Image (spheres, helix red, strand yellow):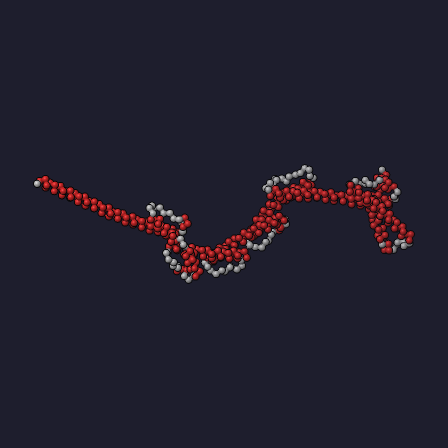
Length: 399
């Protein structure tokens, strides 16, 4: 009972003592500022001793109060013996330190508890975020974020928050990649909206989309200008790369030009090669006589055809054979000029064959007719000789 009375009395005087002590602290700090201060050695010594007692009791109370405040047990460290040998003023000094220390310990405990809750919540949020990313990646997103009973309430709350955040971020990253791709197709510089730049995943997705769109646009331009270069090269025009093209697109144009030029050379050579099936002797086309390169390629192709004469002979001989079925060699069956020539000489062979057969047939008829006439004449002569013999025999008998 006495303890409670002492504590109550001490607490009731705190506010008054606080102001009084502050004033006294000022006196201790700057005694020369008060004109009423006694500068004698005795008075100064007393003030110093009183100040030391105040600090000692204040610190003692502060330490006890900080411990009780941290453990949230009010007045637990105070006892009757704490105030037994102390005056009313000293008890007040002690209680002042206790009260301030108590509040300090209480705040410290609250801050530690809060930090612990935040740590558990953050840990749960990080794990939830990672699991959400993995589930999204494997298309196994849960309708509701899973809970772990073994974990604290703060951890599970953080986990749900992180899991949901991961799904939202991944959904946003899909949109970011599409929007980035669209901007990349426009051929403009990267200009990322703030909506996507705030998070690493959405930022990366937008950049990837932009790069893919940009590359698609470049490939499209490369294809277009490669065709333009091809046309220019095939027409054998002087190489003229359009200005303002990127190095990649300009290179594609030049590549197309080279391909067109080579294809023109190939086609002209093939034209000359095919002409060898039509003409026995070389003659230059009038369209190429003003262009030495075309004329050279055409002539080279004509002279490279070493199969034409052999194919003519083969077709002619095939036409000589009995039967009307034509069989063009597989190597030349897709060459229109070769097929035309083969059929022409095959028909010549067949015509010659028919003419020869006719001539043989006529000869046989003549031969057969001659043999028949000889046979008939011989028979008549034989019959005449036989008749003459019979007449001679009858004349002999008549005599």
